[in-house]
Image (cartoon, rainbow, N blue to C red):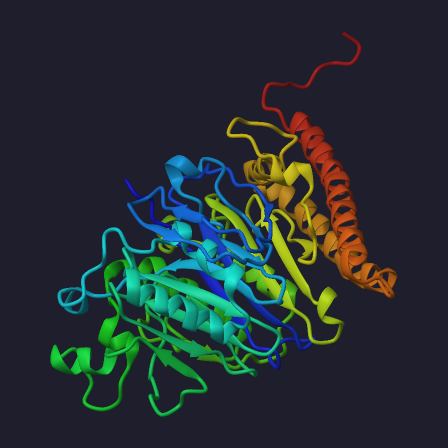
Amino acid sequence: MKEYSACTTILVGKKASVDGSTMIARNDDTFRPITPQKFIIRPAAKNESGRKIKSWLNKFELDLPENAQAVPAVPNVDYKNRGYYDESGINQENVAMSCTESTYGNERALAFDPLVKDGLDEDCMQSVVLPYIHSARNGVEYLGKLIAKYGSPAGNSVLFGDKNEIWYMEIVTGHHWVAQRIPDDAYAIAANRVSIEQVDFADTANFMWSEGIQEFVADHHLNVDHQGWNFRHIFGTYSQQDRFYNTNRVWYGQKYFNPEIEQDPTDGDLPFIRRAAKKITREDIEFVLGSHYQNTPYDPFGKGTDEEKHRFRPIGLNRTQNSHILQIRNDVESDKAAIMWLCIGGPTFTPFVPFFANMNDTDPSYNNTSMEYNLNDAWWYYKSLAALVETHYPQFVQLDTDYLNELNQYYRRRVEDVIAQAQGKTGADLTSYLTSANQETVAYTRKRSEKLWAQMMIDSINMSKLTFNMDENL
């Protein structure tokens, strides 16, 4: 049985960010709380014929090109039962890709273009696209051609970014899709629903679409609006699940970025594109990805009624297997501009660690993850740390907040220090240096995390209920 994911996506244009970076980000939420993942480098290929990929979810197979760029990937450890799901990465040309955000088309459209059982599924999608593309726009074009040829067995949305552009692509039926360029001065949030709204078919600079989609909609009388061509209205859903599982996540993210705007958390027509009240930082994205409706009645840890606290699905979950922010900077040289901020263990309580994408290896604690519980593995360690914080949330949340703030201060300094020390290094020497620097960042993060772990364990011992007041003279 295929286990569908239920992710949350945030996209930020270069003029909407505080430092001119483009950022695409997503929570990888899976069906089960425990789906171990590893962080690896898939090596480049040069003139290697006979390369193939086969899905573990269906009968899809594909002959791969002879040449491929090296890419980081965050696949499942148990890929034979769960599929590959490389999830996210930045290739050697600084093109970022994250997939997928599960997205559901409605029965009216699917009646005439049903999903393709053995089409290109999400477990292979990252692997067959990212190593071969040269820009965010090219990523949409490349994937679009694959969907036209092989079809899609599920509704999926895909994020692409480079230093100039961010694109969001929604595949909603077996063969039809639309992609929109996020304006440079805007952000967008998506949460398992069709998000793109009005499509301007005359504006090819900002929209792309599957061949024949306009004729498909007209022939089958799918446009429900009197005017315009609203992709969400034509292909999307407006279900009970949308109102209490999906739209509320978009509502909270927009509430954070635009606190001046009043909206209903169950509104099925919240806008896709927004301009934030202030410029967006990486830490802002981290907060939203880890959030659980803080400062509202809907916070599971808050003071609302029991019904309010369980009304909506939080954004950060215990089954978020990894969370990532793929950042392409515009203020440094291109060989140092791409950073994968990777959070293994859940974005509510554990850190987003910066990895320069120009690397040839990852730390053994990340790339050698076991299926069995093992605290030497980053995935198991940070999952455990998050569970420990949640066990005594009122007592530990401030300790955890201080820990995350301290690490974020360190990371900001660390990134700039690494870039400064890398000046003059090029080619293989630079890649080797950045790889070593990444591993030093991992080691520091683990050391600081052990300090938090120790403090929480000591406090847990002192909070034991198996105690009583005893006369010290006895």
